[in-house]
Each structure stands twice: as structure tokens, then as C-alpha cells.
Length: 304
Image 1: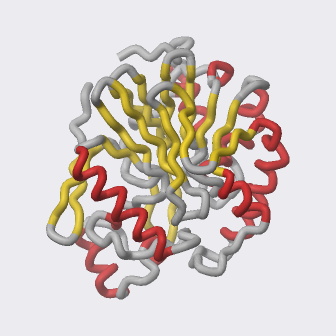
Image 2: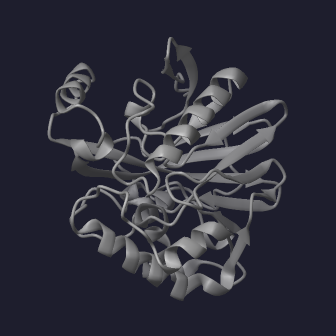
Image 3: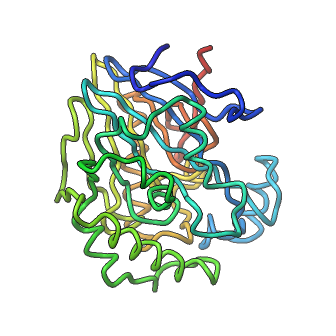
């Protein structure tokens, strides 16, 4: 497919040897899933309330290493009419311990996407791996001055005085999250467009507050021509299909996160809509089926 947001051919010198973008259509909407890379985190971080032996058995059954799991980082580009929308913006350079993440700027360039064409950004939440890409100086310099950044009001309020008491993150992370959110607010406060519950960003593109992972966490729903896709942000992790009740160490309200996760998975199973999430393996396009008391991820077939 050809996306109108592609302003020039990709530079062969910037292309990766592995796939880093995947295009699809949702009705009349053009959608591009872009990989920001991967970041390695301790495996206990993705299941903090799980029995270690059961967690280890799940990892082994998934052919994953026992100690560190490479979390994928996915962002979206959506074209709806005259609107070009980024959904989340990757890690940026906020944490030097993640050299294989923060690839969003060069991968957008490899896709031929002109940052000056972006009209809107939707943030699922303000963790550093979702806002850091906007703090890269070369990105900031190329964004249009009238860029609109949509984020839940509850999220902005939370990061004024963030509470990490219910999280179980690696030690350096909370301070970096706090400082990155402060940098982001200093840089973009005047361009924020906050919403309370729902906001239509463009025809067929709606952000919806869920809470849970953070108080202002949101998902983005695409609906067009009888087709649907939901970008679930950090509401769903790879382990969440088999064990939706397992807590993630980055969840600020683990109990509410479980409720949100199960509700989203049930809805996706009932509607048959496509699901994409930040930390599912790239390109993270698939559907959800119910499997007993849990769920089953049905990966989409790549359409070349």
C-alpha cells in the first residue's frame, strides 16, 4: 500500500536489515506500526505477583530466557483525512542502558515519513518509553509549531507529583521516569490538549481513558468502514493472555490494571477487532480469542 504520509522514498542507507514497519488499512484509515526497538528488563518485572516457579515455567514454555526479557516497543502512525497522527513516540535517549531502543526517529526516516507532516500526537501515557522520542532534539526541531499533543488530564495531574508506591521497577527507573516527564512538560506544556474521558482526534480515531497502568492511561480506537483496531498501549503484555491477573512492575495500580486488561481482552474477543500493543512482539497485529478462563493471542498473517 502507499501512504500519503510518505513524503519521499526511504534512504537505503537508513534501512534496517530486519523489518521495522508494517502497513495496513482499517477501513479508510492508513496505519503504520513502527518498531522503536527493544529494551531488556528483568523477567520478574512482568509478573511481580507470580510464583517464581510458575513464572519460570511460563517463560520456558514461550522459549524465553529466564532472567531478562526483551520488551518490544511499538508505535503507530495513522492517516485520517488531513490528519497525520503519531500514537506514542518511543524511548528517545533518556536512558543509556537501553542501546537497542530509541530507534523511532531513524525508523520514521527509513519509512520516508516527514515529521513536519505530523498534525497530532496521542499519548497513551507519559512513561519515558512513550514520550522520550519527542525529546530528541532532531525530532523537536522538525515538528510543526502548531502540533497538538493529546493526553488525558488525569495523566498530566499524576505526573505533577507521581506516586510509585505500588510499582516494582528496577531501581534507577522511577527517577528517570520522573525527570523525563518533567522535561516533557517543560518542552510541550503549551501544545497539550487534555481530555477527561474520550476525545476524537480525527475522523475514526478516538482516545479513551482506561486508567490502571497509570491513572491517565488511555487506549486509541480506530473505527472506519466497519473495521476496528485498538492500540492498547501498556494495558496488555505478552504474559497477559495466559495470566491476565499477573501484575506488571510498571503498573501504578496493579489491581485496576487487571480489571482494565480483562475488560479490553473480553471486548477484543467479542468484537474480533485487531489489537496492537506497545510491548507485544512486532508488528503486534492480531486478534484475541477466549481460551477457558484465560485468553489466546491469534497473530495476524503478514500481508506482503
